[in-house]
Length: 197
Image 1 (cartoon, rainbow, N blue to C red):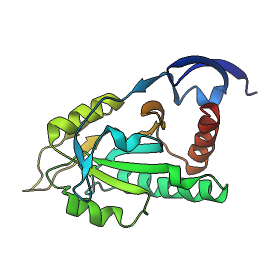
Image 2 (image 1 turned 120 degrees about the horizontal axis):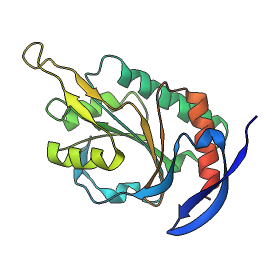
Image 3 (image 1 turned 180 degrees about the vertical axis):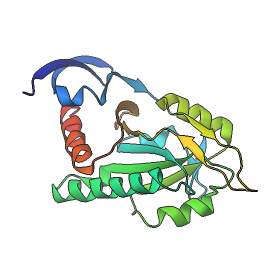
């Protein structure tokens, strides 16, 4: 039986008691984490900085375009999440997805632009210098490791496969761990946005 649990949320810096279902406790952070400044670029070569998170709900996934399995599967899941939320008449203009490459050597803005073309206008590819990517990834607790080359220019990257949720106030609120189910993510997203209204 699902039990309602009182959970403390920090909304606009204020500690607020709100009931959260036990199924959300596995994805919500006990205390939202404010993101700090970073300097990356998007698929169009434009600056990608902290302000891009302001005013919108953002799903963030760390991956790379040469990924053979986890990344295309997860991106397909996110497309399905969008479709389900749109069918429920959720305001989609305020939801965005950022695909953050952990393979900056190969994932140039041009490569990312071609890759992101398949997913829709709300999906943006992000890359940058390794030191800035590392800074950004640490804020999410996301790790990655570039494996040894199997041939010149051919290698895999081991990386975190969770999907992270950032609120309109630029705070990390939750993460969705694999295995990913689009219906579950869509429903939990709806519940979380209700809690933070």
